[in-house]
Length: 415
Image 1: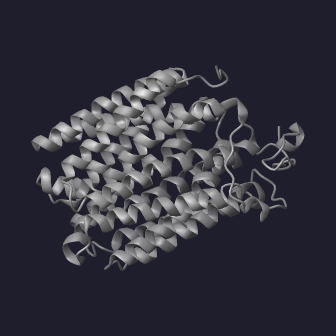
Image 2: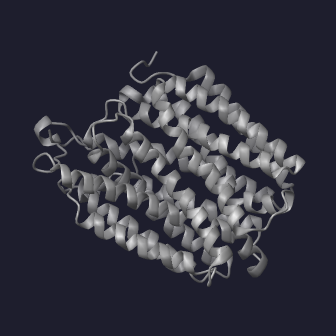
């Protein structure tokens, strides 16, 4: 049934018509696969600079603060796109908006082909952040629109963990190319440009799920809203996203330097594998959330995440690389459980028109959690040792876990 047939209201209170009838099975599968691929490749591009950060530090004189600023620029670009463009796909259609996001990420990759200063890195990451912000709503909504009905958890896992999977593959692929291939500073971005173009073409030939409608300019007014039935879930969602995404930005900005300084390895592939261990295990842990109610999965995931962070901090202070990797894998898997459960709760009872605004809120919380701790950590990195900064992230995780244990609630049960 389409939203027109169901009479569902859009985010501005007007009908939000979808395509004229049910999508053919082949078309739905193509759209779902194309959207998942585009989301994963876009985020693979976002992970590609991580193994190169130490190269930029050693060859171009970039600092930890400069790299942290680039991570913050990416997050702020994403936040701006979410606030201004989060509902655009309800008006332009999923495909047109998704292709726009892929084009912006591609443009950022082209800029990264020639990075020799902090300003170029920051500008490229800002552009990619805008593209990722658009992708975070348009592509994730497209995934949910076209996902098979069974298994029931597939839509939330694909939409929430597609970025994690892409980040993992992008980090490992980049680390391998930087470490062993010619043109280590350029080849990875050239490969990503090709893949991004391919995904844009696949989306262009996939069926649309939302009929374009007027009001696109009005939709640019900053607005973030959730259906009343899930608003009581926001405080715990914010805690989960803050702790997990803050740690993700820590792994992007400061873990490369931490691994080199404290764990004594300079291999780009090792850096990529460490980052991938965090992100890939998140995608593997996410389906486990489907075995529990959302609130219980949040509690289990955050408790395990706290244990993992304790192991990571011990590994950093004692210089034990294997313990660090084990803690990283557990942290990734447990955050996958917590994040997937949180997304599933917020999507409870959602309609076609609800989904883009809901994902706007989800990613606003997520990228805010990534940006502000990273901004603080970057400012402190010139005067505070990296192990001490890692301890601060552990304290943040402890607070978020305690709050989740006390306040987690099921969707549809506000009391």
